[in-house]
Picture: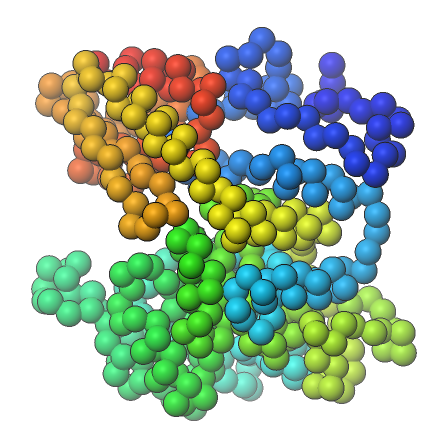
Amino acid sequence: MGFAGKRFSQEERRSPRPQVSAIRCRIEDETMSIYQQLGVQPIINACGTVTRLGGAPMPAEVLDAFAQAAVESVPLEHLQAAASRRIAEVTGADAGLVTCGAAGALTLGTSAILTGHNLARIEKLPCCDGFPHELIIAREQRSGYDHAVRAAGANLVEVGFNEIVSNAGVRRTEVWEYEAAITSQTVGIVYVHAHDSCPNLQEVVAMAHEHDLPVLVDAAGELPPRSNLKDIPATGADLVCFSGGKAIHGPQSTGILCGRGGLISSAALQMLDMDDHLDLWDPPENLIDRSQLTGIPRHGIGRGLKVSKEEIVALLTALDLFASGEFDSQLLEYRRMLSTVADSLSGAKVNCRMLEPLTQDCWPVLEITVDCSALGVSAMDVCRALRTGTPPVYVGHAGLHEGRLQINPVCLQEAALPSLTRRLMDELS
Ligand SMILES: *Cc1c(COP(=O)(O)O)cnc(C)c1O
């Protein structure tokens, strides 16, 4: 069999509801998976919804929605306008856009802040010569993701310290430091949300709004708790980015940008394909504010960040499931799988501990502390051996330097548990 996965008959292929084959774990299976046919070895993902490993598994409903969406054509701006209404309901924001990951949302959100509906500026990005383009960010919140902000043409101005991490004091970034950095070149503030971000978002938003500056929030991985879908926009933050391919279980390549209508309108303009005549162009009012425009822009900086109709529909389906608490039924299974792994390691040279979640709608993570001196290898060595064995196992690797591995259950499949426990025992006893 060639590279095709499950074959549909001609009739099935044309039917408005192609069947999506059930998702099964094939690691123990005799048949070749679609990846094996390409010569790519599937892995056991005990690491969570990370992008490097393909993100979250999509539920059957989401895959079915994707397949149904592929059958017909629709104007993308109408579909994004419908998405905007759904996202607004779920987040409490004015409007929303399905983006190409949270990273794409950061680029588009920044673009909207930089240009508004100014056609000359939209045309120029990422060149910002001649107009203000500085965004303020706490030094301690910088990461590789701020490339997504700089990609729009913005310059980042750093403020504050985390003196606790540097072991040189007791304080972190403070609101006055953002305020003191505001100049005529400042167009907004970028804020990376974590449950313990400092200073808190509400205070930063209040200060920014006193200066008429918008706040763009990276909340990519801040779900669950699902209350954050509403709580973060409710701080008054002007734009908020969520990842669609993490806990929402949408397509890995999707994200959500939600916030103030005018900014979402500008972001949509800079992402959507603009190849139309001004006289024919009739964008939905709830998405694009035509009254702000003196003409029709050409393709914007976000044209390369396109999202397909199938991805939009699949993301909206996943968002509905996530927001309505449908995924909570998996929490008990996650916990049971982690207990099985912990029990199976009772004879190994490790210490297992369940890291309990901060909120009820989140899952625990199993932390395995390796007794490196008894084993004669480091946690890094164990992690490497797990990845290179058969089947390859990827575990959470944020605590390796303290000798800790983590097992995150979100992408684990029940059928992979025997292989996972065998591989862990191989490397840890
Ligand atoms: C995952 C993540 C992103 C990127 O999200 P994508 O949806 O993969 O683009 C950005 N910022 C933070 C803090 C993240 O954790």
